[in-house]
Image 1 (cartoon, protein in one colour):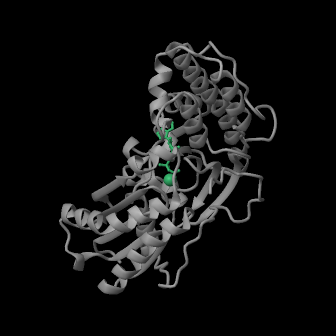
Image 2: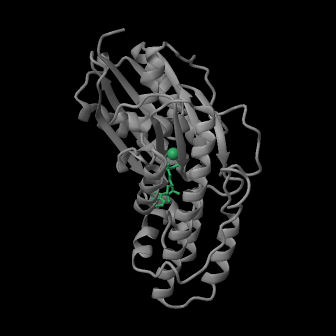
Image 3: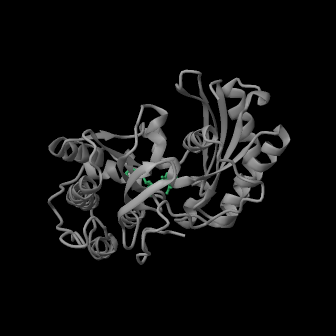
Length: 357
Ligand code: KG4
Ligand code: ZN
């Protein structure tokens, strides 16, 4: 299979309708030919959270158009497409079903293989879209639904080292933002608030910081924010609380990442250690800077996806599709949607474990 490969990826697991076409040339170089993402912020903001039925309806309405746009922009002929890859989980079942069915129909119509992709594996491999990356590496996956440290040992081969035992980090950002009166999803905007505040103004708890290995917890932090926010009145106090929250998160990740490095060093004897930080929250500049420093001190090479590829997109789904296509790991057209689809199936169930759904 040394010829050019063209993969069409589809992502509809939550509130983004996304279609992307990527190409790998004969020399193994990957290029994103198109990457269309249509967000549903306007639909869900009045509910301060995602309403599954509305999300699914919007996917149904938009998937056709987004796919057409992605195909036009890529300049490829449908007859050049090697395979179709759709997210099969985890996510909202009514949303996953839209992208899965669309992908299956395309694959049947074009008579090319169909590949189901784990959304989390998309995030895990996403830096490969812009840089070369060899297994194994340590991954911190921080998104709206998941927060985990994993050893990534190969395609489909994950060992979980730590996980949140309650809220996911993106969820903690969004909930804190909501308490500060920032519109949903507030995570990205909270950083802007934090820049204008005094990070030492409020002392916030760091749950399980001295126990539980590299497992994490954010629920106690959220409760503390709730109490403080009900007593603050001025805009400046809001900025101060945002800054204090941002600083506390950076400090928690600093401690827990050092523990994760230690755990990873015990299982990986590789000389050049790599630390990948992926998922929506990996776009946070303060977290990026803090983790860069932690990497420098501990001799790990930090790797981030490009900021625009941190959040949900279909290029990362096409990328996993490409890797599976190369080893002929195809799926049948009866592949079901899987609302729960952990990367490490053997990891023991921890209460909450960052599962939002
Ligand atoms: O990976 P993602 O796009 O979707 C999921 O798979 O969940 O992550 C979305 C999450 C949201 O909670 C959003 O608020 C958060 O990532 N997020 C951020 C930033 N950008 C996105 N959180 C903090 N700082 C940011 N700059
Ligand atoms: Zn995601």
